Amino acid sequence: MSKTAIISAKDVNVFYGEKQALDKINLDIPENKVTSLIGPSGCGKSTFLRSINRMNDLVDICRVEGSITIKGQDIYAPEVDVVALRAKVGMVFQKPNPFPKSIYENVAYGPKIHGLAKSKTDMDEIVEWSLIKAGLWKEVKDRLDQPGTGLSGGQQQRLCIARTIAVKPQVVLMDEPCSALDPIATAIIEELIDELRSNFTIVIVTHSMQQAARVSQRTAFFHLGELVESGSTKTIFTSPEDERTQNYIMGRIG
Amino acid sequence: MATSESATIDLVHSQRKKGFELFVMGVLILCSLVAVAVTVGIVLSLLFEAFRFFERIPLTDFLFGTQWSPQTALRADQVAAEGAFGAVPLITGTLLISFIAMCVATPLGLMSAIYLSEYASKRSRNLIKPALEILAGIPTVVYGFFAALTVAPLLRAGGESVGLNVSSESALAAGLVMGMMIIPLISSLSDDVINAVPQALRDASLGMGATHSETIRKVVLPSAIPGIAGSLLLAASRAIGETMIVVMAAGLAANLTANPLEAVTTITAQIVALLTGDQEFDSAKTLSAFALGLVLFVTTLVLNVIALRIVRKYQEQYD
Image (cartoon, rainbow over all chains, first blue to last red):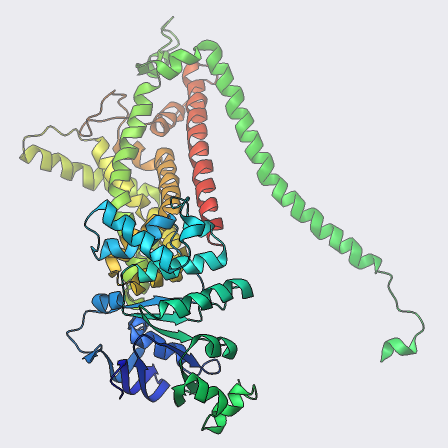
């Protein structure tokens, strides 16, 4: 384990009922870097992502074994409050899912429930900071009171990113954040991800190997519930050790 | 292949098949026309007879009069005893009972809908949903005598023990039982609209570290509010049009009162009273039933149209 690892998974097994979705995953995720999880559909990369902020808890039949630590603290320990965990480990979903509220209310939602703002001015500052960080401020600053659902798909996804970072998490998990977007919106979000890395640790699941190569510094390749290989993105893409990784990257499996 | 052997393909349709298709279509059209024709007929007869009533009693006297005693017009030998046809006590009575019913059914129905859609495990859901559906399937006449023979005496005895004078037929008894009756309507419609709120919104809220109840209060319910409002309006319209319970439990005294412990009467109960027994179809008394029917019809129609429009608009939002 390197010293800069913020998240560390040890022998993680995940089951859905009888079916084992993840088999003995060991992975360190470094701080303030973008780590991408790649692999064919059903390989368990999304399952792994969702076990980092315990969104899997919402699935009744899901069971997690092994340990995942964030800054040394086991997130599956009985005394851990899921609510506090998710405030530290935020999530951006595949499909943009803004609340049917105004743009301002969308961003203010998290800070409000966690009581992060003492006054209206505080809240205004948080909202502005988040929207600037998400690269959306210029486009929406004159219509903050309008519904978030009225924005374009790419803008909605940036609004969701702003909403997530508004609670100042340490880790942001992204589950195929661009799969519902066109190439231009995708390019904007990819650029954004690169900028966000200075403030947050980012873990991104992606189906696009080009995207993994463009945005991430570390890459982990999953196949059939196993972590086949992980390392610096450059190494994984240029000289993978495992044949399966090579085949996937060359487009021969998946 | 068969087609390559014959030079032409047979494209002419069989006359017999075509005839049958036309016949089927004709039967279907006829069946749907029956319903339309009956509706039109009922509306026309309501309008026509109500118009005859308004030839005798001015519309303003009917809508704004506070005296309702049509029974005086019953005795033909009483010359000039036309009776009083002020519908205000009936309208307020209807509203009072419906209001009590909604006060009972809204919180109970809504809370059970939230429990069923957000908290209930599969097993308890499978237990409670059918129970609510049974509640919806009880004939209203059963609710009626439950109200008249069980709830009303209980209220009366309870009232007496604390020194309140509860009349044996009270708006409260009818309203409470009517509330029970419309709980399943509210809970099942609200359950549907709450379930229609996309899971993605719940995930987003939970993913930000909101608790389950925060997510319900701040995301799920606000998104479902239009649909819930629609279901409440439908329930209110059902309450206003309900007849059996009020006939049996609310009484026939046209009191103009806001006191739920007194007996009041409703539009529906009066229509029943006006038209049971031997009738003289020319008297103002009998005709007034049509005027009341028209008022009821217009009210529930307007409520239903608004409710359905709200529900539909809401459904489009997430399609």
